Length: 232
Length: 236
Image (cartoon, rainbow over all chains, first blue to last red; front, side, top):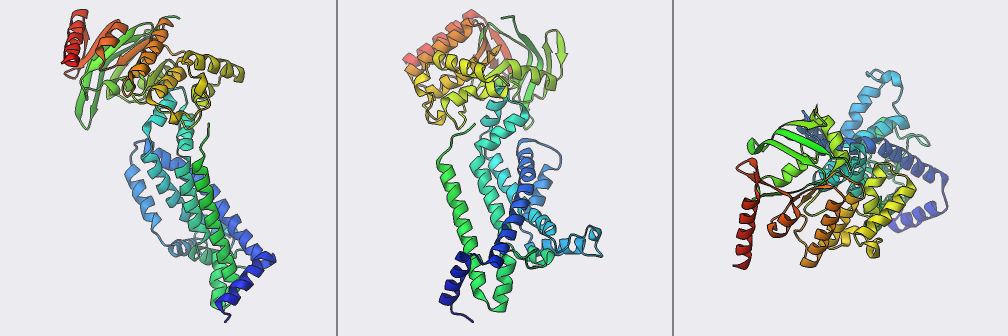
């Protein structure tokens, strides 16, 4: 086993030397998680808006379900999807198990409740005058909804970042339904888990650095955006 | 401007099964200025919001151009013709100019028309010198003027002003009064709620009072009486 110093130095070397295997893992990770966020967020934000601005039968039940889903461990979602997608499972014919599509489905299920609940909180605590002003000035309900979304953009962006943070660093679900196949479904967290179990820390540290830099970059971007604020 | 008239019958609203008001009949029309008074909590703002189609009543019968309309159809008509201004107007997170353009953009005005009308609105409300400022950073009086300009430029038939003079200093109040007079001259119907009866009664041709969960039309004598009471309280 390498010392921490040597492993870290080797990790930096791997990163800056553009080691193909390492960057392939990073690429898969970002590609899968970004696709999951892009697919989950419009639906989550729209549903959150409807739940906050409309009164309908079953609204409270829906909030309760999403709150519960928020605390379901990733590995349980992975297990459920594994059973559903495995060859003998009800969705086995789709042949999605151990594919990036399966990982995307898993990550959507993981990030959707978080984005939805955080967006719902933002909408619920928003100033109702935004909606009323937009409507009275002639905006259609759809235009008024986009105005509300725009006015709350920083809160909603924080929800997206939290959702992305949850799935980019998640191991259980990706490992179970992705299978950790090199060049195919191996992403940053599953690679870190594998390399650590092998006692090879340098690649794990390099990937950890990527996650840390990404977290810092996203938070810095959000802070900078919050500091500005021109719109329409 | 042809006269716009809308009639609300059996208009009721309650919150948590507590009846706020039950109004037998109410007609609003363009070209007239109406003062709506009532004590705090009597439901003035709620009534204005219902008239503007922003709040749903428990029950209402709406008659527009001799046609009875259901609430949803009426709302579509109302949103085109009636504009409601909040007590403390909301400014979108954008420049004064863009705030004024908001309604025009949403209603599909052409680019040239938007530029032309924005100039007119900025001049009308004396806001040219702050047109590039973020509207959220303005004072209460300036925000109220932006809100009036934003509404004025859409040429509504009726303007509902909810406590337009609150949180505004005397100078700002004068400017707002000046703008309201201009709107009135343009033939826009105005319904205004205000605790400042002394000045608004001079502006208004009729006076409605929300009292005992119903709407009463006050005659000139009663209005003068209320005005005198207010003056006494101010001088005391």
